[in-house]
Length: 312
Ligand SMILES: [Zn+2]
Image (tube, rainbow, N blue to C red; front, side, top):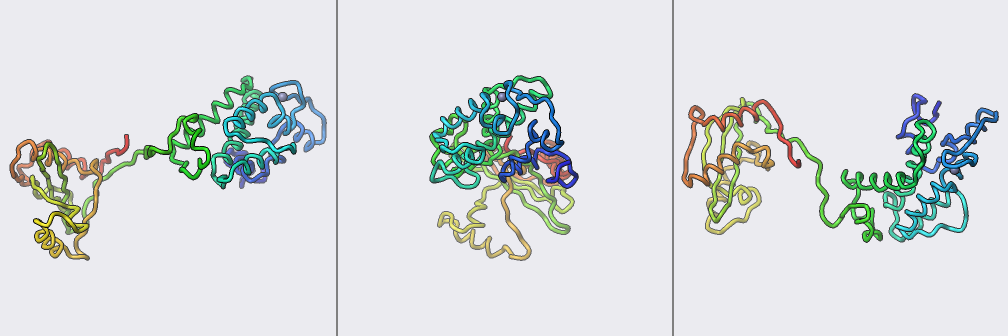
């Protein structure tokens, strides 16, 4: 039974929390800890050698642990403090650089090393998988890379160690990819209309498309046009159209009308309209009845709330 979880069960999350908060030593059930708890002797052998399995041996002194620590200590140029012991290992990493704060890579690496030594030990004990230092080191590297892919690191977390980020296959100078998001077209509130617009600039030619839909998501009208939505919302724009923009702003009523940005992926009808406008280079309007099939299909997709994926 575990005291640190509500139902007494083992979870990796609770174990990780114990390691992170420094309660490691009594929480890890190596052979000598179990012997002490049950008050009897039992056969004990480390999974990597013939030594008795103690916490100090498994995580620090064993040849496997030693190789893993040595590799990463060298990579980060961390010098171990002369005092021996579990906690001092952590202290050496924690105070190894002036930029090390909570969440810094130098506070993450020791945790990953401990975790993957522990999982390697369990794999050896229960699945007969040989404890291999290289595999543990690879898992540390791989997990750091995954954390980066999951946008868990910022420059501050690698401050002082930016020069070694390429070793982990990551770059913090180029922005990391954002995770994909689902984009939905939303039906306007009852009794109101939604106008979606899109523009295209190509080879010196500007085109735009607009579609007006009602609160049942049905097309009212669609046409090619040209406009300057950013100039309307933010002010500015060429002086020659300032009067027109001012007039549009004047027509907008604060409580009644809203203008917002929609991602390109959620605006496919207008993208197609703008594209057609560019191809045909003229003004043209469709009524709801004569809207071509290719547009009607996209309108139906929006109407049924089928999302598109942005970022893949
Ligand atoms: Zn051993």
